[in-house]
Length: 257
Image 1: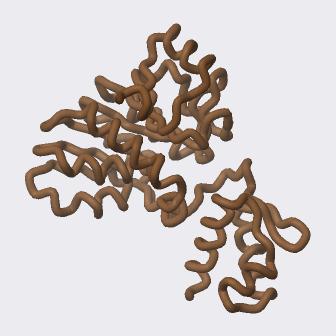
Image 2: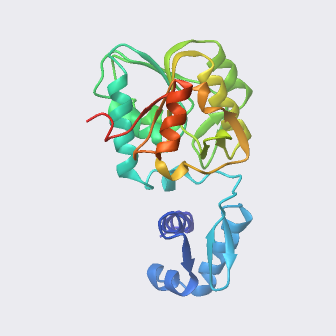
Image 3: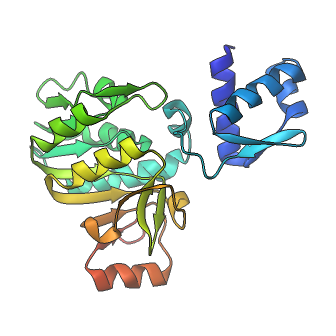
C-alpha cells in the first residue's frame, strides 16, 4: 500500500471512529509504529489531525479539506438519500451548478437518470463521472486545481460561474448552524459557493446531518440565502420551526414519504 493510500485510510477511520491508536494502526497496515507516527506527523502538519498520546484525533477546526477520496467514503448512505431527494427536484433539460463537495458527486451520479441536462461544475471528479453523458452539455469552470479536493477554484472559476445563469445551484458545506448559517473551511471554496448561489433561479443546500451545529471558519451565507435545505435525517423541531418562519423549505427522507 502506498503511503498516500495509508494516510487516506487513516483519515477514513478517524472520520468514523474519531480517534486512532498507533499500535492498532501498525498491526492493521503491517508496518512499523515508527512509520505510522510519520504518517500522523504529516497529517498533523497538513492541519487535518491533532496528535495525542499514543495516537491522534481529528482536528475539528481544520482549515484544510479532507481528500475527496476520504469524503466519498463518509456517510455514503446519507449522501445517497440526499442525492435521491435532490434529483427528484430537478426535471429533464434543467441547467444545474454543482460544487465540488462529495455530496454533489453523489447527486451527479443520481442525475444521470435525467435527459438533456446542462451541468456547470468546478469538480474534476464530477466531470469524470459524467463524461459519457453524450446528450448533455457539461461545462468546466476552469481555475486553480486543488490537489486533494480535485476542485477548480479562484478568480477564473468564479468569473466563469458569474458569466452564466442556471436553473439550479446545489452546494454543500463543512458547517451549518441555525444562527451562524452556512460555513466552509476554505475561503476559495466558500467564495465559489457564494458565487454559485448568486447566479441561479433555485438554490439548494445539500447537507448531511453530521454538519449540523458545526461552524467552520469561512462564511458562505445565511440559511435564508437558499430556497431549500435537503438533509438525510429529520432536523430538530426548533430548526424546522425556524425554517418554516423564514420560508425555507426543508426536505428529508421521512418528510417526502
